[in-house]
Length: 427
Image (cartoon, rainbow, N blue to C red; front, side, top):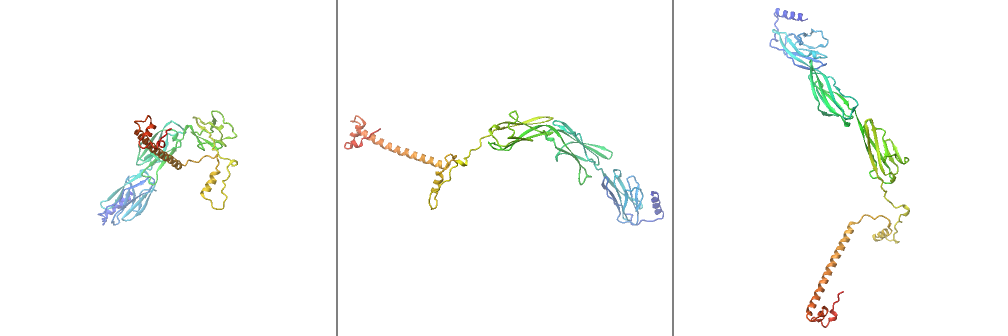
């Protein structure tokens, strides 16, 4: 076919056929990027052409199409459009081997060419996670490795722990035209890692709508630990109480063992053990003690304790000893507040517990008592001061001749006539 094309071109030259209108034209092409396995459309155009043929050649300089004539037997290569001004072909199921420089030729004198580079993106393979064994034991140290190959350019590998990104150590190796990417993650596992999902995610330019990822869930075995939950905070006599033993461990420690004060549970008719629950139908003080729940798996044993202290139930008056309803005065008129209060308070149960103190009333009483005390002190002070002054005055008036205080008062000026009346007596 190529021989025929060259012969045809030589014949055009010998015959002196002038390709008018194409002497100043150049073919126009564009670079193309396609994902491996996709379809590449190669288009070559000229603005003006007088029936001059266009030709597409591959990187090996093999002619693919000369005008509308197919030159290379490759079922993946098809003609899309062929005119005097355009030649478009398609390559389906593109491989990495198809990558390279493609040439469009315009057969003028001299021949004019344009080159377009076809870039093929290598799609990374689904990542694989290595280094995980199941089950793990608490305290194990492991290295998870995520590997993906076939990417071009090199893919980006990321780690996620329950959708939260964690950093790994990345390594890139070239293999021909593609790359192999590996990322490692070192872990020291504990009980909190049980059930945690580690995801390796691959991002690449060829994965426009999604990304490739692989997830592994850790299974960590660990010794149990136990907690006891109770249905009421402050148990009282006669109440219903449920204790629940909640063991945490992997494998799950089942069944659990209930004991009281280091021995067996008493009165199993009233104290019910069902699975992990210990139920008291009606509490009394004989139930007081320390209750222990014990759980075991092949990695160890754990226990928790609950100290039960049953308190007295609050006392209430029985219906047979309850006080009778208050009686109201026998009258036909409306009741005033005084009659109603008298009827109610006069029939109050003497055994009933006193209500909360009235702080306002107590404060008022204290204020009245303090005020009365102050008034009494003031009056008494004034009284004593006044009488003490009279006694000193009269005593001074007759003190020179009187043998004692009484005589001095009697002998004072102006007091002789009424000596008996003004004589004071002190007890």
